[in-house]
Image 1 (cartoon, rainbow, N blue to C red):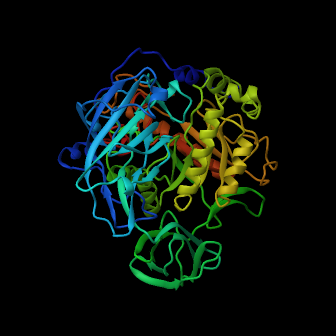
Image 2 (cartoon, rainbow, N blue to C red):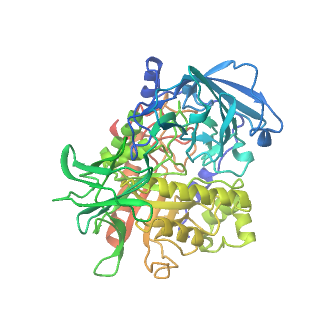
Image 3 (tube, rainbow, N blue to C red):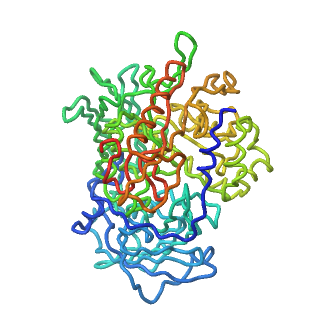
Length: 612
């Protein structure tokens, strides 16, 4: 049996009881002591207007006990006073928030701030944007409800023009978050963190901002480059009647421009032939900046000429292809956690530093694991040439150790034995809640629609290790219908139903080799590449840069040289499988996270273990 029992035993989480993580900070978090804001760039780089204003920074907050919090958040009365300051967009559990306090399921978290009435066009609207609130919230402007929302990974907005008044305006937000006590999408958060499950966070965790939009304005912008013809099509859906003007730039050089006034089916469209267009690749991430003007509304965006897909070579072997050329994917699992910001990176430069570290180590892809980042992250990957394998966040019931860990770890044949399209199968996989399934589909649709214009994203990953898995074949078809331009990994790890473009194996306990795809040639597209979508996890803690005095991982080493040699040997074995038809791999992982010390970077990002 090709199974390392010692590593299996090592991987069983140990109950250490309540633990306090050692306080770690990043250099970017430290720098915030002297900086008013963590982020100053536009939060939406694919549809950026100059007329915006950040509301990030110091707010007031209050925790209010409420045994009916799960229902009361919609219409609860605000507290009489607010006794703490909180730095937005960091969750109260994150040290960078200035609070360091866990929101409990039996509490509501209230936010409060005032802002001056902005200068707006004579005829226009003021839009209030929240890019991420975990999990449910009600928003009030000057005492009137402006919006309510559920979904930690979905941005939302509200037109508050009619609620504004001269001078100071009051903004209140009431938040409820049950963490794992509910079935909502929450990723790897746990109130009682342990092993592979990390500190739960809550509240506002992405930027809050105002946008001022003229009455005649762009509602939706689509940029569609065709690398076969060199043509760029610009399509706009707009409110009001005006002339559409488009300018295209290669770096700062104008390469195309045009105007349009004719509408067809509610849209205005212009097409341009881009002379001597450049392809987007990791080595040369060529982007074309686009400025679109509609009346008084001016938005900036960008796009790239590139294609991704699964294609067969002359011997019939399927490969992942970029621009119709086979590309071997060397990836890192990227949890997107930070010791001082939790799910919120301490700055844009912090995200860029992670990307550069992965590139220096020879990796061309990050698998963004069970999390959706702000659009600033994907814009960095677009400009820096980092490919992204994008996971959907998980939720549902707490995963069953038996079905999500024990059985698939010990019994290889079980990987294809469990159905996910029956009531019994959904219950075993934590997806019995109809409300959870609806939220997952709503979030998945939004993520695909919102992020599909980023050239860095080269694949979607729907379900991971059975966590909340359901109807994966149908969900794969849903994503193909939304975005036929990218490969879809239906299931990563086990309980594969034969759908999707990828046979994605997780292999922490067996020898590194190719596995037989039981659905080879039977998928919807008739071809699937094989990825080792998780492996490795070799542990090397560094004193003073680890959250705990013990580690969770899959292998320990007595010396740094021993760890380094084992890592290089494992990656070499995986690289060698390219010649046998492997399409790529994802090594676990980019950075340490809390109890896990299996990263190439320490949790505080102060030590690169490969550059010691």
